[in-house]
Length: 172
Image (cartoon, rainbow, N blue to C red):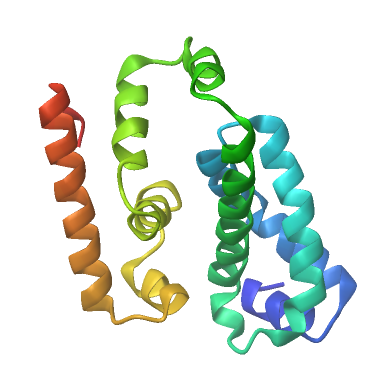
């Protein structure tokens, strides 16, 4: 069955179609969760929570062709809420221990992305981690495509500036 047909049935509360839909988008949702949360266990937990939330609200989707976009948006919102909660409990020392073994260039890019505003981080994750199209991002954010392009351009410029100050401009 075609993805659009599955989405239409899922929106009409067909449980089998909903399960098929989640299976189709499982990898993209997991990548989003992991990109934000940087922890396998938390990413799996996010998948469970987002599946539950999506099931509760799937009937509110107006455009079946944007179902993936809608699901990713739920995941991003959930992850950002979790990150805000976690910031209250994690000290800088614990963060250093968690990231000690990671590749230093990854750390630099991660640090650079963290220096961006939340909105800019969302755009970077949607475009470069999720491979979302400009049109999809515009639909999710409810802004014109030109605005998405200019904000992405500004975010990339900020990343380049941050990395060049750190001596790692060749990454972006």
